[in-house]
Image (tube, rainbow, N blue to C red; front, side):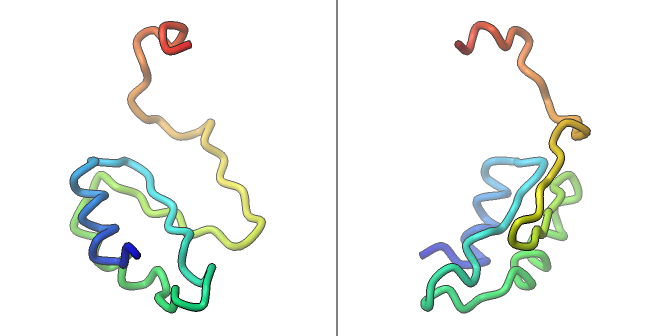
Length: 75
């Protein structure tokens, strides 16, 4: 199981701009809350953590993230 420390390390390695922690509370063995993860990722100023509630939707169309030069080539 990936905990907050491992997840924060993955954010650093992958250099992500946006991250949504979502496995917390999904199974009895997942007792952590996203608080530790949020605290650990504060040191990455270019990463934005989105904490969503069940059923909440994140509108990604307004986010500016590096775009592919030719998206059709990925098809």
